Structure formats: structure tokens, C-alpha cells
Length: 626
Image (tube, rainbow, N blue to C red; front, side):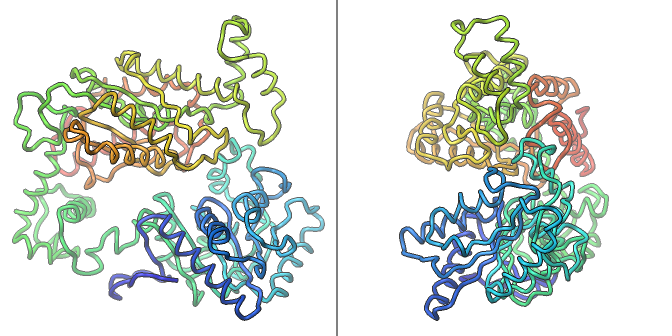
């Protein structure tokens, strides 16, 4: 496996497991796939079988895609490969779309030349009174195959590997286990609600995993950052079963930058060794120091810096006084009540340009509610201040409408409207929903209705904000329209559609969701579509005056040191934002894709706005009734 150097020892002295950090999950997945391919080929040269332990979930998908590509384009054969999967829900039929049997065949086995008899996946249909012997036999099959040469792992937010939940013993073997509530919450979006998530699973044990000759654990995204820190830097404990991997002599954690972001060497590198102090790192460190010492910026002393690992920064800058003043000014200049720029004003210390005074603005929203959840107050200000604002919804959001909600609309509409008067055949929708089987993909009529529900809710919200209907656009990007939770990759048609709306409006400002922690990656795909479109449009003259701003709010917030523009909201503006969010009625009370935050979106939004305001107040900046 080809890795870059981990750097000086002192940079990793808090870390108890070898780890490698990559720019993104795609780059990392290719490296992992290459290691697996090298192992398969080396075993083939020796005429030996290669025994792989395989994982499911979102983390290994790109690894499997690359292995399939190698098979098709480079002749990589799996004829000598024997596989054992980590786990399976219980009870679970092989035909169920949510089964790991289905997942593995969909992503890997159906596309390679592995022998069917060499594929081993725990059977979720074994009778309960036969499970104990079944699990013993699964262990013996691994042993008889020569043991696991390579084990691929993901990690859950509880610290589980396989389904070894908190409390699992280091000597545990393959067994049935009750799933932690957090694990079921995280899986709920795949099952259209937590009530449909199985409460138990069959899993390889901790001892089974630890007997593997080589272990690679992969983790992507901000949602995994906290548990990765606890696993890599914490004490070994059954409360975080992944920490048992600290005892393995040949384990590597492969992470993207977001998953590694809470590790000490990234989160607070000044506690590890000397730093190269650019403005971003200075801002991050000084905000952290204020929070640690519970002091405002202008009250920090030389001693505060020296006692908290920043003596080299103090020596570089000369005094705490100079550092504090400079940092205070940097943060103060991020605050503005004019997100589109304040006309006829010196803009040298403002986040946005004064001119043109009236700007054309695109607000991209991945789903039909991200606009008001994440920046409803700013959205309102831009309209009130006279800018030509266009909101652009990138996907239909139909998959987030429950069957019950769609059925209600269909039945009401069917009572009042004949089939000839509408674009949706409500009778067929009612018949489909009343007879829908488990995991059945929605018909086109049902998806159309669910998309219309989201669309009409969006119109209601934007009208309430003050936007005219002609400035509301719906792209319905094709990548999203699979009828399933799993979406298609970003395609040329998606990019062309985004490009067309930018060309049409020729904006001075573009706001886009930089909140990439949504459970199924839609935000990331939508942002990549904008990046790709703007890259193609860059030679156009109007793009010289176009600024791109990234907003967060639905899933994750910007840290203070990352913020370039902060817009204070009055109490009345916060209330306006709340009511706009509540117009998205199908997403209230029964949010299908909740993520790891159990609060409703309007509560999340208000709490995050409030907490950000408190942080600015605590730093000693101007206090607003906001």
C-alpha cells in the first residue's frame, strides 16, 4: 500500500493506531483497492487462496467500484478469492433490498468472477434455535479457510466494528447481537424510518476480527470525526469496541480530512509542536484559546498564550496586545447586516462589495428546504435590500415525502379533481401506495406527486419570505431521480442543467450548500455540480464579477474561525425564518432523513443561530439584539 510519511513522531504522539489521511474518500478508496488487488495477485502467484473479510455500508463502495474496474479493464481475477462478510441484519431475507447479501452482490459479486461457493455472508433467515450452532460453524469456516488475510472495516458512531456494539468483549466470537439505538437511528433512512430497522444482527466477533493478518478501517466525513478521535487517541474500552484495534500489530485507519479533523494534530496542532502560523491557523487557535480560558479576545494575556502551546506564535507576533487587536478586527469585519454588500459605503473592511448596489443572486438549495433552514434570514435580507434574488432547487426531494403524506394528498385530490384535470393519476397513486410492498421503488406517478408536494411547499415558503414565483426555479437534477436512497453519480446532464441556469441569470453572487454532512451525500453531489458548471463558465466575462459563498446549517455549522460573513438576525427575522421552514409541512415531525440530530430542522436552525451569536458575544464582539 502506497502511503505518504506520517511526519515527525511528536505530530502523532497522541495517536495509538497507525492512520493515513487523504484529501478525499475517492483517492483513499483507490489506494485501499490497490492493496487488496496486490494481495490477490501475490496469492495467485503462489497458487494460494486469498481470504478477505468484507464490510458493507457507504465507506467501502468506492473500493468495490475500483475492484470491479480492475477486473473489467486490467484482468484482475477473483477465482482464488474466498470472502467472509462481517455481518447481516436479523431477521433478514437475502432478497430484501436492505440485506447485506443484496448489497454485496449489487456492488461487487455480480460483476466479478468469484466462485459462488466461495462467498460467505451471514444468513439472516436461520431459525433462532439454530443460530448458536450456525455462528460456531461460521467461525470454523473462517478457520478452515486459513483465517482472514485481510479484513476491511468501517466504523459506526457508537464505535462499533461489524455490529460489535458498546459492551462487546474482546474475546467475543460470531454471534447474534442487539443493535444500539444510535446504530438503528443511523440506519433508519435506509429503511424509511426507525420502526423498520431490525433490532438484531449476526456479527463476527471482536476476537474474530483481531485474528485477521491485516486490517484496514475506513472512515469518511465529519460525522465520523468524534468517534475516530476516541478510537485512535482514547483508552482501550469495550464502550468503544473499535479501540480494541489498538492491540493489532498490522492495522491502519484510512481517513479523509473531515474524518481526521478532530485528531489533536489537526484540531489543535499547537499542543503537539511548532506550527506554521498562517491567518487561518491563528484565527482557529485564538478562538480556541478564548473558549478554553473563558475570556474575550481583548483580555487574553501573554501568559494565556504561553501556557497553552502558543509561545512560538507570541514570539512571532511580539505581544498578546497586537495579536488580540488584529484578531478582533478580523472577526469584527465578518459581521454585516448587508449580505449583498452595503451601497455607497467603503467596502475595504466588509465581506461583500458595495457595487453593483443591486446584485443578481442565485441561492442554490440541494433539497427544497435547505434554503430557508440554512439561510432563511439572509435570504429575507437580500430580498428586502432590493437584490434580484433567484432560488434554485437542485433536486425534487421526493424521496423524503412519506407514503402516508403522499396518500393523504392523493386521496384529497381524488375527491375533488377528476383524472382529466390533473397531471397526476391519483387513482393509480392510491392503488400503488395501498398495495406497495416492502422496499418497492415508487412508481413514476408517486414520485411525481411527492415531488409536487415538495415543490408547492417551496413556493409557499418563498412567497412568505417575499420572493416572486418567477424567481423560483426547479432543476430536478437527473442524478437524484432513481426512486431509491442510492443515487446515481453526477452526470454531464446534471452539470449542463446547472450551467444553463447560471448562464441565464449571470449572477454577481452565488450561495451554495457547503454542508456536506447530510446522510446520503446529495449536498456533496449538488455542490460538485455547481463547481463543475462554474469551472466551464469561468471564461465568460460576467464570471469575473461572480462570488461564490458556501452556507451551512441543516447538518453542520461553520466554526467561528471559518466564517467569512456573519449576518445578525433580529428576533422578528428569526421568527420569519421559523415560519418559512414550517411551510415545509411534509418534513415536519416525521423527518425521514434525520441524521444524528433528533431535533426538528427549525429547532436546529434556531439553536445554531443562537449559539453562534453567543460565541460572538463571548469573544467580546458587538452584541446585537439578535
